[in-house]
Image 1 (spheres, helix red, strand yellow):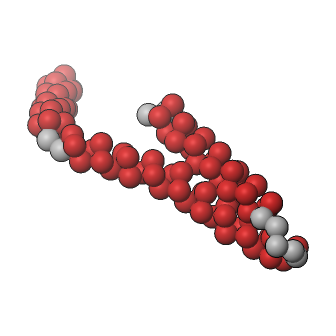
Image 2: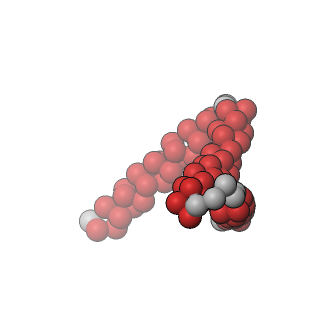
Length: 95
């Protein structure tokens, strides 16, 4: 009795895996262009967002410290750019 139940569960499991693999095979062929466009968009946001936030933070510090300098702005722009590039690198490293 137990062997029949185990065998039936195994057959159901194999059937589910086959259905899902068939679905994945069908979907992989479609939308490859959109997949690349989405990846490119994510990369853009991952670099642009920290860079812009760094610019705003640097400008805020420059106005609070006084003077007309932009040293903190440039520093935080470069720091934000480095964080963005590192994020993209990590994305593709663990993909």
